[in-house]
Length: 130
Image (cartoon, rainbow, N blue to C red; front, top):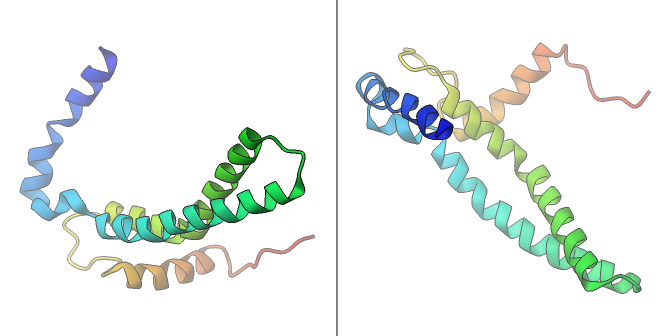
């Protein structure tokens, strides 16, 4: 019941978003999400099989353990490699409405600008092992 009441509170935003930003506002950042799915699934599938072969070659491990570890490592690998696209998706969706100039004009623009901005904000410090 609580979840239903909470979701009902969000429905009043739909007409406001449509009126202020138009129909395409509901798909902000969606192109990055769609483009991210293909490499994510490909990396997951490929790395799962590679991890599974490697763990099987060690011997002495149950098939359930091999599958669990292979799936976990494959998910970790896919998320780590596609994180930049997920970050772009989130930043594109978060852009404020009504701005005369958008911060990011496209996915490629965001992929270029975000590291530049992050570096400036963090004082261009590189990750170092002390």
